[in-house]
View (cartoon, rainbow, N blue to C red):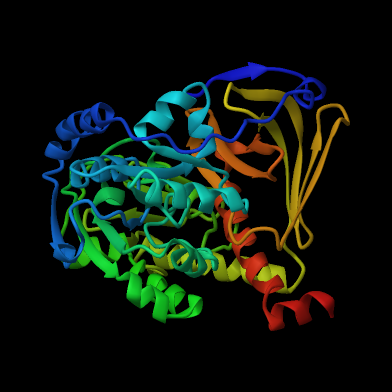
Length: 430
């Protein structure tokens, strides 16, 4: 999938009008049917099946909030199949509307800016639920999982549930990540995909519980570890390219501690600095080939990287500094390539400069609980996206395959936590 890109100077982009707000449109029945038809072939190839738990509590035409973990594009095909008999709207990133705004709205999509607070989003969701009598699908993690485990949920989610006041249904997939992990460059594997569709919360339970209690329940419901589950279930992924691109996630060597020297090829991930070699086995486990296995799962390696980043932040040693290509999003007509620049990320947050001195943007480390980062974004490259309600900046690192993207997301998440915790505040002000 590609996106429309227009060359334009940053000065000229500043003159453009932003996208006008449009209320959600009634979902087209034909397009809903078409989504199901187009999804059928691929889901059949995965042997897709699902089980329902407590869904008899939900009325056939009763609008609800559908929350789903985010693994791959297969998630949308699952929604289009499981809920083909009811009207639904999907909250999705606004860059998906570029060049096809009307079509996306007729499909039932509601645009939002990832990790940028928007009061209008709640109003649009409420409108779809009450006026259009449509359910709303939301991926509260907001980004695909990098390592096959859950990503942070927004603290505002509990309040959102109380404001909407409708039943909550949880859809949890199994196998979707293993089939199409983000790091693997859009190469799909042969494996079964399934889902559990569970009635999670009644309106009465939502009313009785505090936002904090709701958040705790949702956090527990969203826990998953796809690689560990794969191993425990005895599922085998036999493709000879299963470790290709894995260095995008596992960027730090646990043996020599070097960063940016990992290389994922075939079924191995190797450190070009010290030569350590790990095999990603068919059952989803890791095995050291020349040294003791430090981590048996990708998810454990990724957690260790998170702890390393946190330690760097606490010791004021973390810093990202990279030259980038810059695209911006201000409307739904096109992405605009405005030139080159430099992106830094440290204890103060993100700073982006460029476009011959015309662009200077700073985003505080406490501005967002996570970061919109992606691999091979619209077949352009690995990306880090920051911005506000006026403009979003898409930064494509010029370093080899954007190996800093995963670390930047970990750092953004940990910086936010530290700046918003008593321990973190003390450490940053001492």
